[in-house]
Image 1 (cartoon, one colour):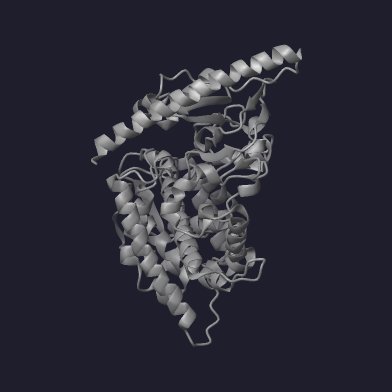
Image 2: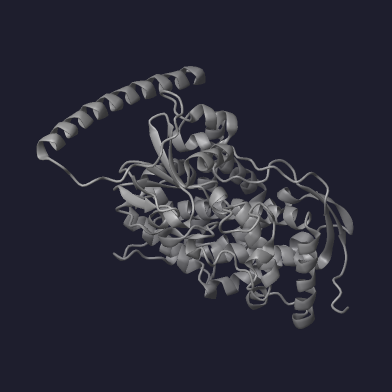
Length: 502
């Protein structure tokens, strides 16, 4: 069956499903009214969130295709408020925007609001036996394994590995030239992440192929993937082929490490995962370790390289903040010389704010998703209360949440100083005012690793090069679940020493 026929078949099936569901609901409502009339007065129930009108059967799908996701979400937020529902075929998706209405989304129990039902589309990418292919208890333990591998004591050992990779990579640059920053950082972040994941021996031999395979994985996680993860489109076929090949590569790596007879005490994530034990005492399987390595490398490589590219594009188009970041590096060099380690990176507060502000404007994901296993109530800033029905998909749109004008002054402006101690614009909004790494029960365990990696890269660049953005400021690729800079990001550079005195 060709693709157009498949799509029309899905549309017809969706239309039939919607008709059945609508008829069932009408009958159910009539029965409830008769029962309520017979039983007498009842407690007033809170209304559901306002629903976008859309069009029959398809809902807001045509608007999504013509406007794009960002414009669609913004328009509905302006029209309907901080809690609203859109329809995509038979899927009802309720958006919650802002700290006031997001507490249950981030802090609710998994038995009440779950990731499982809305995250099945990740299984073809991450593979079997991990993440959303297993029950919550198993997944929770697997995240604990990641957490153990990313504790501060481990990060301290990773810092020296990162420094070596960064210095070696940029040593290949000439005295001056032009490069595609996005491509450079994709390659560098792959080397850094893999060195910390797999160790030196593996890193030396695997990365001409792995970088391109990771790009195929990301390109295969599109917005349509959320609804139809196995739709036979070229991007999904390339994704599946790339995942199969990565599985072969990483299986060989795992088997090689297990069969090794030397006494080297490896201190990387691979060894942490091989040594990990579930609460019942069993060890991790080969399939699980491979899947966890693929997911860690995929998330780390794409998110960090995109964030690093956005950081460069922002700094190179905002002279004031670029100068402040360079001046901070001058002061750090004056205190510590060329030494860069975990503790020195913690002193780079200006650079930290530059990265944090970049991630506010360019979060790693367009939105986070949950499934309401039970109905729950939200209360908006102006006092309105809504009951989000059981069965709805629920979304927290990071790209809008991070730009709310009642939290951030001039929210579309790049202004790292908004996070300086004297302003701290995110503090009055509480822990849910800034969500680039999630929050609550499912906060990203790789946040500290990502900041350390990004700060180390840009510390080196700011110390050693004058740079200029040559290409236009990049647009965002909204066609994928984890949007990044679209096209090439060309910069020119000129090597120079960083003076340590005025």
